[in-house]
Every structure is written in C-alpha cells, then in structure tokens.
Amino acid sequence: MAHRPEEHSLSLDRFRGYLRVLAHMQLRARFQGKFDASDVVQETLLKAHAALNEFRGHEPAELAAWLRQILARTLADLGRDLERAKRDIKLERSLEGSLEHSSVRLLGWLASDQPSPSQQAIFNEEAVRLAEALAVLPELQREALVLKHCEGWSLADIGRHLGRSPAAVASLLRRGLKQLRGSLHEGE
Image 1 (tube, rainbow, N blue to C red):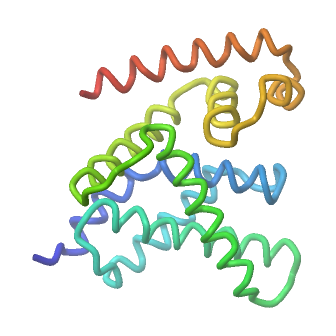
Image 2 (image 1 turned 90 degrees about the vertical axis):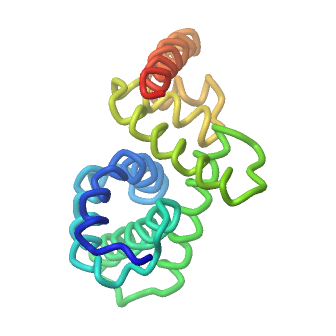
C-alpha cells in the first residue's frame, strides 16, 4: 500500500533530530564551523518536502535512508558553493558513504546485531528516538556524547576540543548519559 505524500510530510519533521546529529558530525569533520547544522537540516527537509512525490518507500527506515541521500546532496552543494567548483559526483558519493557510516555509528551505540527486518525496523525507530533525545541535551553534553560514543574520541581529545579537563568531560558524559537515559525511558 503506497503512502500519500502528505502522510510523509507529517513525519519528515520527526527525523529533524536524527538529521541534525548526522549533519553536525559531517560539518565538524568536513567544513569546520562554516555552516550551522540546523540550517543544513532545514534545507534538507525543504528539498525532501518538495520531492515527496518521488519517494517510493513505505517504512520509516526507507524514509531515513532517502533523507540521508538528500542530506548528502545538500552537504555536497554547500561544499561546492564554498569552493565554487563544478559538481563532484565523488564528493556526493563520499558524503553519502560518510553519512551512512555516521548513521551506522549512531545505530551501533544502541546495539551490535539486528538480524531480522522487524528488528532492523525497531532499531531504526530507536535511532530516531536517540537522535531526538540527543537534540534536546545541552550543547556541551551532546557534543561530548557524540564525540565519545559516535566518533570514538578519548576523554583527553574531547577535553582539548571543548577546552575542558578530562575530569570535566567525564562529568559532562555522566550527566548527559543520565539525562539521555531519562528521556529515552520517558518515551517508552
């Protein structure tokens, strides 16, 4: 049964937090503060809304994958505009692969194996919930959690990046995880 475009438009905003976490990871890695993740996500959602009639999926996981592709193209466009270069398909493919890898790291935070399609659907739903919960954390806590658990940075590296001591980073992580767990348990 195919979904009407207006049904998906209502659910696009649900992926805002998920896309913001992915965009933030890519912007830090590739564009070092030149763009704001919220602006990139807004542009991505505008493009998605305009192209809803092209979406052929039925499941939230398919919608998430489609949105990641649009996010990759949006980031590639920003990079191209920044460098005033012609379209670079390799850059788009590289960004798609990097976003997929970032998404896998985010999902890996939740669990290691998801063998069945139904478990994968549940897993993707949990990833969106996790990203929504991350989005409402204070900036320093969110940054510390993403750097530690999604990007695998050490406490010392996070401390240097945030201008904090490793002990202060450990405290940010502890408070952030406590708040994150509370948010996730409230939603159950």
